[in-house]
Figure 1: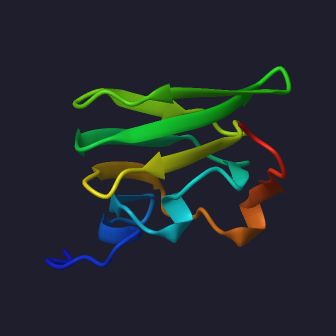
Figure 2: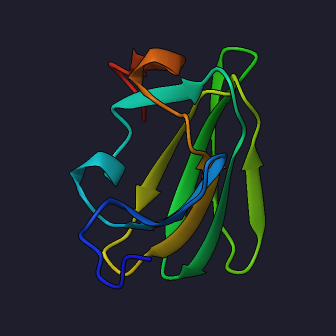
Figure 3: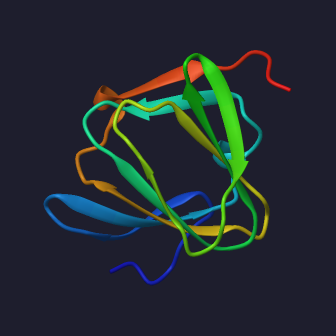
Length: 113
């Protein structure tokens, strides 16, 4: 188990099939510039403290909503998503250990108000 963490997406525990990570404010989790989706697995997030906004795409429309603390947000495999974290945000995420560049797609967002 990793007892320290760096800003962004920091692995804390891992098995052969899953990993648990801390997610904190970093440029990757800033304003919406791209969406990503994992093609082989769901990904779950729990906001522990601070502020965070989840973006998803449904029917070619980008939807955003504030995340509530102590609530599990399960992003189904193949769902476009992005997290925008405030400086005080701290989340825990759980995902399959085999998530990689090869099974994650990215889509740039050029204009979003």
